[in-house]
Image 1 (cartoon, protein in one colour):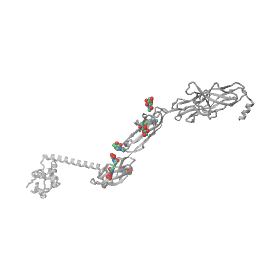
Image 2: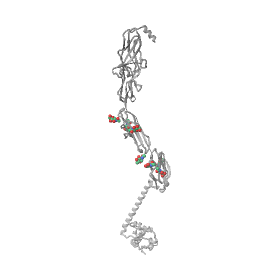
Image 3: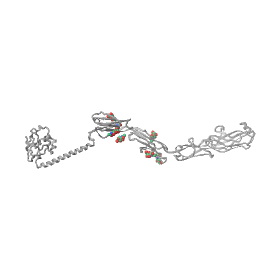
Image 4: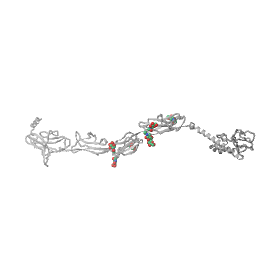
Length: 525
Ligand SMILES: *[C@@H]1O[C@H](CO)[C@@H](O)[C@H](O)[C@H]1NC(C)=O
Ligand SMILES: *[C@@H]1O[C@H](CO)[C@@H](O)[C@H](O)[C@H]1NC(C)=O
Ligand SMILES: *[C@@H]1O[C@H](CO)[C@@H](O)[C@H](O)[C@H]1NC(C)=O
Ligand SMILES: *[C@@H]1O[C@H](CO)[C@@H](O)[C@H](O)[C@H]1NC(C)=O
Ligand SMILES: *[C@@H]1O[C@H](CO)[C@@H](O)[C@H](O)[C@H]1NC(C)=O
Ligand SMILES: *[C@@H]1O[C@H](CO)[C@@H](O)[C@H](O)[C@H]1NC(C)=O
Ligand SMILES: *[C@@H]1O[C@H](CO)[C@@H](O)[C@H](O)[C@H]1NC(C)=O
């Protein structure tokens, strides 16, 4: 190569044939790019170049207004001399940084004399700048990206978001479009702008209610609402609903001492002032809270309510339990004095197909689930007499009562009539205590009755005859103290003398055929 240059130099010595001089142009470079400082030089003919160099003008430390020349290492990775040894003095600077901005001077030495630029080449280093408009956008809004270059040199631009290419500099923002955007020079992707963030705001997504799905009665549950939202949902932006009703406006809501009524469908809502499709309050999915508890509120239902002997009876045991009771046991306490209960069955329904006396007593049932057991209160199973329950029995009984009352009335009427007649004629009581008196069929008009003096001894209890003749008006009195009234009756009965045919007595052998004038004599001993 060197021999080739020498040959050229030998063949065309002083090809420039001019004056000493260096011409160079000012440059604008984007930071990170490579730049070539244009440069041409000339010198009088008849000589050849023995060395070239580039230096940068630097302010002299401590001497304001004074500059020093700093020789550049032309074969470094940074500075490359891309000119030649007779006319081209271009300098390439790789990966230009702001430090590189400044004035550059070229110098060269020939076989006779050397030369340094009289006018420096100025290098300015500029930036690519990304503009994102707007930088905060609501999901669905339009976004425009633009790239501003500090140098007037036109460049082809590419777009990147977080290192990934972006196809279009204009788009409708989605949540995924949020990120850091920069533009870069096509073919020199290291020449890029500083990244600029795009903030995409969106209504809450993934609104999630978390809680323990099942809890034992008396325990505690914390309902926690969370969401993905931009801006994040503030504390005042959450609410908790049970079966559609607001129960809390906290993000974290704790219920201690959980009870069965806390069971239900829960959901939460989140909002951050951003709406999606016109809805700003976003619901979580619904979660069911299951409160578990051992059986309670137990009762026994009797069907029918009472039973006759031989009838059937169903006892059903009901309980509130979660999970539902899985086993039921029936107990009977036959005698109230016995404290021990006899196990009589299992299952929620106790069927007694044919009830008899041995089935009566107190019943209770026990229900059990995984969490425990509980007892119902006791019910009493009694049995009614056989016919009372029948439909025809009360009717028959009613008829019987009516007939009885009618008979009684008829009897009363008859007695009243007889009494009216008796007022005209004195009434006689045919009082026979001794069978020997036997006046009944005798031809004589007189009736003799012999009363025993030891009447009470002979008749420890009132004889049927005495009861039969007791006047109605005195009957109640009799029933209270029969022995005493008996004596009284005797006193009255013995002295009455009346016509036979008007006699009121129950004796079937009454003297229907006797004359009105007949007289009865009764003597009392
Ligand atoms: C969200 O939940 C609330 C309360 O439970 C309910 O009133 C509303 O209808 C729900 N909205 C939607 C869109 O489901
Ligand atoms: C709710 O609970 C979560 C998780 O424990 C916690 O990160 C959050 O700060 C709580 N929120 C409030 C408002 O206390
Ligand atoms: C919604 O905006 C209003 C007014 O700008 C503000 O007072 C309120 O706190 C905001 N609510 C939320 C949940 O961001
Ligand atoms: C049994 O039931 C009653 C009321 O139905 C309830 O108060 C009690 O706590 C229950 N007992 C048990 C052991 O669960
Ligand atoms: C038991 O009965 C009481 C009173 O009627 C009621 O408040 C409670 O909710 C009932 N328990 C269950 C589990 O149904
Ligand atoms: C008792 O229950 C059984 C079975 O469910 C039913 O067949 C029968 O009719 C019931 N008896 C009464 C008296 O309800
Ligand atoms: C229920 O009754 C049974 C039988 O009387 C008894 O052994 C048990 O202790 C009772 N259980 C409860 C929880 O009262």
